[in-house]
Image (cartoon, rainbow, N blue to C red; front, side, top):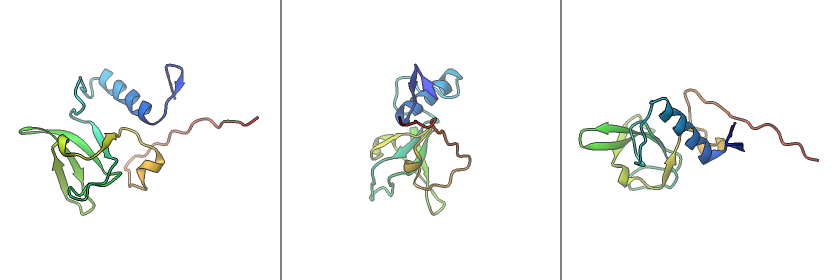
Length: 118
């Protein structure tokens, strides 16, 4: 996949997906970092919150404002104020490495064309 003539990887792929979804009015990111429907992947462990590198949550609207909901390994859900999250990033797409063998309902692998060595 190319955007603006450049190959799309990692963060740029998330930005491209976010722009495409916004153009179709499926999300409304506006100027805010957090918006309803934004998938968030934790990139730093926080033992106090019980959130760990690779955990994925989604931003939802609740009474009192936006929250990020994570499905936990024990089947429960935990809800956090966005400001409480440890380091994180948008996660419409992630590398296989970052997926850390997660069970994904509908995975899609994007593979670049092989680079031939001369």
